[in-house]
Length: 218
Image (cartoon, rainbow, N blue to C red; front, side, top):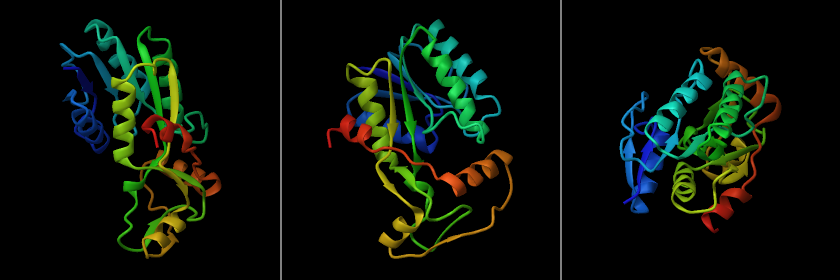
């Protein structure tokens, strides 16, 4: 049985990846943030903690641990449009992608769009950016299926895939759910989130759907 380590495997992203791997018959090993228990693993799915202060350093440490444990295969969980200077946490993922590509490991990079599950469609959807901005939204189940595909099937080494289940605006998704949508004032908090909301307000986050369709055979 193929054994796959999933960094941050107990978060919502990690749980989705582990569930899809198990559905495919693999042994999914959810790791904590340290990700040190790599013995006997054939591959790893590398997720950094959300809004990590220094994601490149975290990724470099994880790659070094994989090399020591002789885990040759890694899939890195990046983000759609990683090189956006206005969003520091995206830039951290762009730098981390470079580290992955130069790691000497057999790598694949996934660039997911915004999660559909981040929107509460049971009531009026309130977001701190333009509800008519274009997005490529990704369903967590689709992310898990794509991760399992590139980890368990041949031919994905050296590939980078943008992932979105569908293109839509927040207003369109809300309308389909029979609820309203409105923009609210940014509540403040982490400055990276404020920067992200400002970018979304001006540009959205468009992501293509064809790579996911091709990966999942849809």
